[in-house]
Length: 437
Ligand SMILES: [Zn+2]
Image (tube, rainbow, N blue to C red; front, side, top):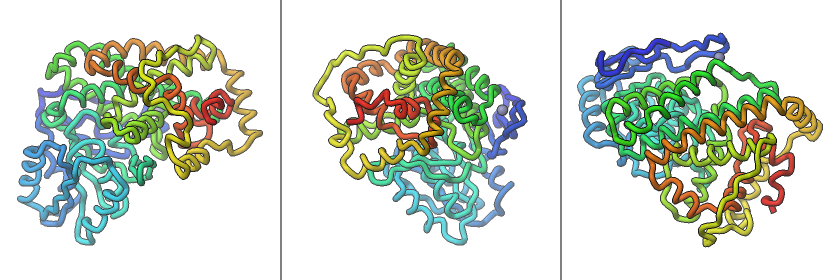
């Protein structure tokens, strides 16, 4: 993959087409423009896919930089008929996403989304449902899942994954991405580092399920992690050059995640845990955190648990600083229908298969143990940087989540396919049974 230095050329392609050296996979999103002022190239990018003077649906949200969204809309109105839909800053829901489909209408030729991951998720759903190409302009670096062909949308108070369209074009404008509030840089940093758990889970699945695992992609993700960890000091000081490098690594990771498995969401226990943790915060009327922030906390905990399970160390003790939110049962936490739905997700499809998985996990115990220890070491290294960027991270975790709560969330975290993550494997091994009462 070729990379042009940001800020030296106003608008450049970060990676027009990325084909992994393993030969097994390549990008779905071919047009990726990256650099300071890259959004000026939006009309030119549109011209490659749609004729002028047609209708476009532009999706944004109230939490998106209004001046930037208006400037882009004005730019597009010169050549297109633009219908603008602005969401209230809310959780991305299936209802919002379905509401967009009639707005797209028969005469609309493309969807343009300007905003963060939530805006992208609803727009991807609408683009797929209407069969239209999606042009995404992120206004934050915390959009690692933006290129993946799925959206995590709320249906009621449950987050579900929906297969959607991968964006046709990504316009990563450093001026827009670096203008996001500081918490977004912390979220992007957290999410990039949390991918070490996703990589471990992929590796784990390759051992027990014989799933495809690409070492090249894992190494590229690791390089991105090392780069952002090395930058954590200037990032904490809001250094623009460091922020630009963070955006670059975020875009790179988005590409790796898309190419790593174009058929499925590339995610591991960290994202599933983070989504469950989010549900916990919503249920308890706590402030919602950005996915990347939750994913980092989740990854940090999971890596320690994985290391424990593979025989490296004892489970860490979580001091019960605050018992006021302690949960007595999952039923109390989720309510009956949701409980049933989670139970269903955690079901073992075939007992004989599971015996085989267990045998393989034992057979490869040393390799898995090394991988878990490596994953844990990376996150330990990253933790200092994360705390630097996000000073109350330790506080809110310990204050609001007790060890038991953490374990309940662990137990609840669903799996996108059987035995995909170490977490589900642990469930089936009965390690989490005491918490599934
Ligand atoms: Zn590969």
